[in-house]
Image (cartoon, rainbow over all chains, first blue to last red; front, side):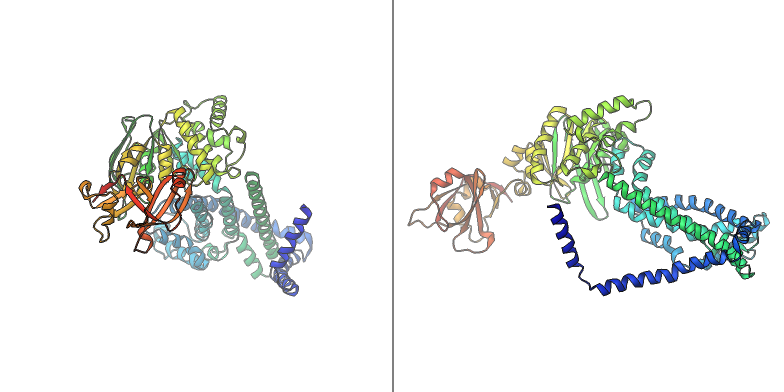
Length: 289
Length: 347
């Protein structure tokens, strides 16, 4: 009986998806073709170019002091920005999902601003504010604090472009979940802190992790905004993406593509983590429902 | 007084949810806050719980003024309309939550928690579900788990928001009786909110009828049914026929027994069981015709229409026991004599 019903299920499914075969194969072929041409081929090129002069040249470029410094700086930027963005994202999502206040929709629009503004402009804003001729620049240089063409500027620019990631992920999620469970926790005698860590966070943890992951990928890969404020000082203010560009401009193709391969590897790791997260989340759901 | 509410008002923008409400609820009662949607009943419940702040007025629980106390210090148990079970916790952990979040020196040992949670799950007859997650439960089961969770902290008052609102009709019937019995055993002062007058009458020992943010009447269910304080309560509780004596064709009502002598108002509300009908004799000038009837179990509801008028507003409903109706040998279209035994008068 099971076999029969399974069969009829498939048959009815075929009937409802009644597009002719050639349309299906054409669409699948087109998608695969585009992915191959614009995603897989460039990635392969990166690897081919990186290894064009052999393994020795590749590893030498990756372990060059300037390349290592770029990697360290990229990691430092991510380590500083991701927690800040996370804290900001959670508080913004909390405020927007839980409270009604004047100007709420304006706040939501403002959170999206970094998505709509070109990163170059983001970088420029900081140069205009903190640069030597900027509004606050003279005050900072009087106090011997360097922001533009230094690490603080890079971090500020990265913060600007990454701060919507966590908030954007959490706002719809928290709005959908509502706050009945939190009220229930409070009515059972839980403090605000207990409610947050025992009820709110577990409910949004997958969304939060996803946002953190995307934010991390962007923080490490950001080029435009960072390029404006960094000053491209080798070994000091070059992040990995900047290092790729500088090497390329100096005809050091192996060095450039080796750096690019490191970034690509990072992207792949992010993708794998994201897939694992989604798989675990589904697993979690199946277990409970 | 176990729960006292003193001159409470609450506005949402221009909308008045509660308009100067005062209410006393004695220890041990099971009270229904009854009213149409938007009458402010849920808001009042949430203000008593401390989930909402009143614009004006005070709340007292067991004589203590709790107006400024946060919800977590009020010692209340709250059951939410959609249960609000913690979706990432098992049934056991849901019920244990209130015990586990207690300050360290009041917190019971793990063994004590386990024992208490199983006792509560047995009380709601769902101990066999202790390792399930909320998603895996039916509506009625979730409702009972939510109740067990609220009872775990030994609340001094139990507040339930539309406790049966989201359930199937058959489950609802069982749960009503079960809640009544549970209240009888535990004797915790309880308030539940409902828009279903039948539910309020069946479950509660006291009913508070609310409309437009005001209390229309408070009393025992039977009292409210027999002596409605105003036209709203009379219409809202049970079925009623409404006759306006100043309508031009209202003369026939006098013949039916609504004499102007006992008239105490302009509008008469007549319960269907206060209308007696008989088959009229062949030459009588009867004023109503039997149109149709419906079986309501032991009772039968008879739809009568005034002769010479048309339109649905002209229908009058009478109710009588099945057997009595059979003895009358009435058919559809028969002319019928009608007598009104009792009416409530309103202006």
